[in-house]
Length: 159
Image (cartoon, rainbow, N blue to C red):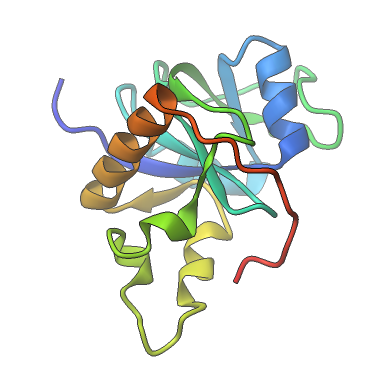
């Protein structure tokens, strides 16, 4: 297998738990994202980002082509554009990595003139990320999985 393409996948605490509750094998996106979801290929990685608390919580490897399915998984939305996935790394929200802890290593933080510019990179998914950013995140998540640090959740604005 070559170098995977990295894609952002957004979760809330609720949708992450719903994903896990049904086995953590299906990732879904809104219908409006179908043209982008179809670009994701088996072997690509989904970077799991927990919104509202701004934490990285996992890596999922895509194991199927994109497909449409409306079988209920999530309570508040259908997310019919789906991919079969297998977890590579899976953290809890409390052991997730605050994205700002990687500020000096990720290209999304390079715009020093606007310290909030990074937020635009975590607003919609799927979104393709730089390979270097994906590799930094995978390494950080592996470290966090081996040496977890519990950080209580505090909901705040993503700044």
